[in-house]
Structure formats: structure tokens, C-alpha cells
Amino acid sequence: MGAAPRAREDGVSGGAASALRVGDWDTLRRDASSIRIAVFVGEQGFAADEEFDAHDAHALHALAYVRDQPVATGRLL
Image (tube, rainbow, N blue to C red):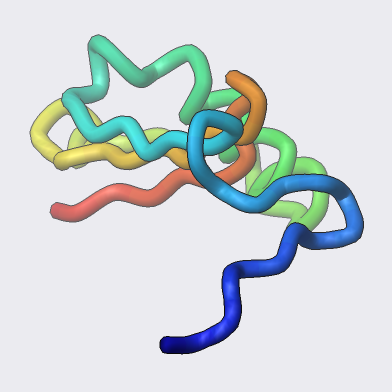
């Protein structure tokens, strides 16, 4: 058998501290929007009015959480 998983320096090792939620835009909009604005608008310089589009309403969205805080998002068109 392999070695037991080790915790990262920030203390996150998975389990109850992390979660993946998948759903529609109406359900996940608030958390997904906050990440997309921070990353694509704030860090990468995309125009805020171009970050969200008609595909959001029909896409499958996924959000990763650590300690109930959203940390990553993606969408499948």
C-alpha cells in the first residue's frame, strides 16, 4: 500500500474541508461570478461586460470550495 496522503502547507488535505458543486447558472451564479470577476476581469484584464454571455444560462457550471469558500470555477458548454 502507498503512503497516506499528506496535508499541504495551508492545511488543506481534502475531505470535509473541500467540496465540488455542479449545477446550473441560477444556482451557482453568485460564487461563480465572484471568481470570474476576480480572475478574468481583475487579474487578466478582460472587459467586465464581456465576461458573461448567453452560454452561462445553458452551461453546466462547477465550483470548487475549500472551507466553504469558492476557490475555482469552470463551465461546460
